[in-house]
Amino acid sequence: MKLFSPAKINLFLRVLKKREDGYHELASLFQAVSLGDTLHFSLSETDHFTCNDPLIPTGADNLIWKAVALFRKKTALSFGLTVHLDKKIPMQAGIGGGSSNAATTLWALNELHGKPASRQLLQQWAEEIGSDVSFFFSQGTAYCTGRGEKVQNLKPLQGNLWLVKPAEGLSTPLIFKNLDLKSCAPDDPLELLKQERFFLNDLEEPAFKVMPSLMELKKELLSQGFSAVCLTGSGTGILCQGLQAPCVRLPTVAYPLTFVSREEKAWYNALS
Ligand code: C5P
Image (cartoon, rainbow, N blue to C red; front, top):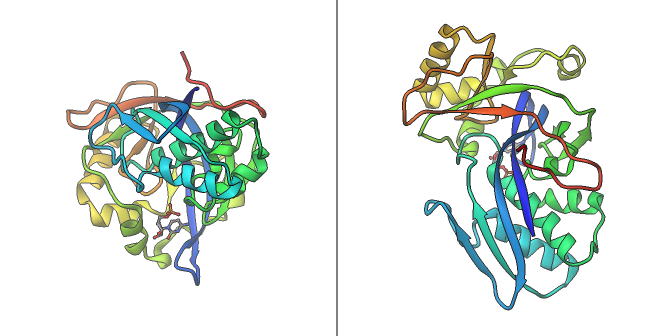
């Protein structure tokens, strides 16, 4: 079984408060995009994992194997799985590559076993893997709250953006640790949603504090004439709105993004 595993972007991301459990309460508009990995799955005698990118961890830490372990625990099914991951989503970009792979794995395992779980149940199980995993069971455009796992499916949005990704990555926990809640935007996220006011991210300030070169990159992109330039997730990916391609120098890479959605009973497709 071959499945596309899309990345996500945050069209806006507001952090509302710090919770007792250490997580932060978010309100964010998530969108699935055409930049994605391809995953190949087959049931086998034992577990086996290969990947085109030697930097990807292959062990139990990889969210793909966390999804496999969770599916085994929830269903009590016993099986071996062979997985090949064709990685295109850059790591530590704030675009949910690992989370998407985990969601795609849950979906694939459910299909390969004759659909023992409903889509809703898979989405609920996904919360146990990470805050962003449940989003990928939406239809591609969703308003996410709680720690990100409360997903309200919205009418699909259409759009095209650029993602600029410098070589360095950022760790999500480090960015949340550097967040100063007092300097977060006052805007009501429901108003942002209603008025389609995008490109506001409360994680931008702590990301710029931890990596000042990222703020320089934003300034440089703004000087190139984009109508909006904004960090996605906890970075280091930067979204740019505009028709012309961003002018960047290697190792920084610019990726064109198209918004994608899926039918209710199908998984996401790669755009050809
Ligand atoms: O849920 P996930 O494992 O993806 O989160 C990684 C880390 O990011 C958490 O351990 C926490 O430090 C931070 N985080 C947060 N608030 C959220 C989501 C993530 O503080 N809503």
